[in-house]
Image (tube, rainbow over all chains, first blue to last red; front, side, top):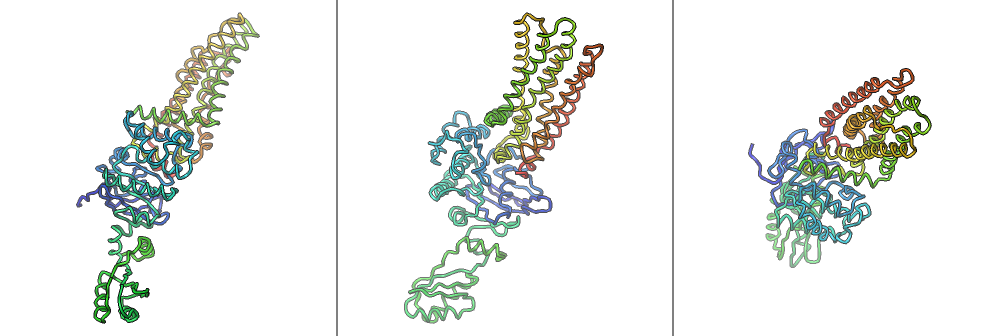
Length: 317
Length: 252
């Protein structure tokens, strides 16, 4: 077997609960310093995959490597280098402890040197705008603030790998933006690797280098957004700006067998075509041959949401 | 490092347990009721009876009081350990704790220590308070001094009680993988404490010619000791073997 290189490498990772295959032969490679997004509907196996990677669950079959450690052979070492934001992270804090005490407790358990603990906590709480509330009990904080506190806890020991389950859920747009920026800066500056479970497609599209779509425990598709589109041979929209007779341009576009729809704007057409990687040049040639004067031929970015829905609706290979 | 992480967990558990009204009440009642009952049982008859009559009464009340004091000292372990394990899961704080680089043994030892530390303190302080209280009342009222605890009682407090304490906590570890609510855990662990009923009843059942037979009391104390050892060893071995993060997390 060729050893795959990455900060997180899963090899046929599987987990059964009785007869249910929660995670089924998942193969994922996440390079160091990248931000990886795992997308899927509820019950698809996202959280179980995260729990397997942070050694909370033992695989029924297959294994995974986090950093240089195997999750079955070296679970303690894996936990040392990972920071975890569990599902519903805002509910996983000790409600009777203060924000500061929550972080102090975990800093000790993660072996953060005693002399560094106060500074580390202050830095994180300040960044998350919680320093003023450091003495408030976690149970008294709003859901959003508790989510920020749970994120601080995951970052406390400067882990190499961060496993985050819905990191910006319950955050207001400003806080969510700060967290997204933090993730990107940590990945870039410290080469920390992020594995994110999310329902928030626009967020994943904005921050993730690579994406996998999981359903019924199986990875349906993995790659960058562009690669997903390529793998799907998805329909693609093109914006074609023309001068002259736009109705003529419309009828020529419509006459092509691979064109699915044509919408007419003031000076442009929005054309949707099948199998764009083969057919876009044919479309352009057809228009030029008919004497249409094209001044712009641009690909409209397919949203991740379109791709996601297409995969889940059975459009994947 | 291993010990210190367990201690960090134990101290946090104690802090959190002390913030729960029910646990706090339980601790206060156990810590106060044990010594109070002991003082009343041992010093009370001395104020009324004298001579051979007092000796006869003291011969079964003193060992009985020691077993009762031991029982009251161990009762809080059921509450603390239930909150430390099942309670953590109930309030969703177990998952992040299980994600820390602690071994299963460190975690279990930490969860055990929280009960052991508190109950040991109640046991030692309760015994001291009872001894001093009884002596103060008897000497203050010019009555004959009764030494509490006697030797079988000391054996019960210093040897049997700590073993029962471990048995309670290890049973709780086993239970924690099977129940979802703290109150279910309380109910299931309570029966181990019934071990103390043996030494409590022993002085009465071993009465011979109006007084408790010391050799029978020793024998029943030893039976309690053996029973406690067997239960503690079995439950601890099962707890260590069966404790698994899978089960704990799957129940969340």
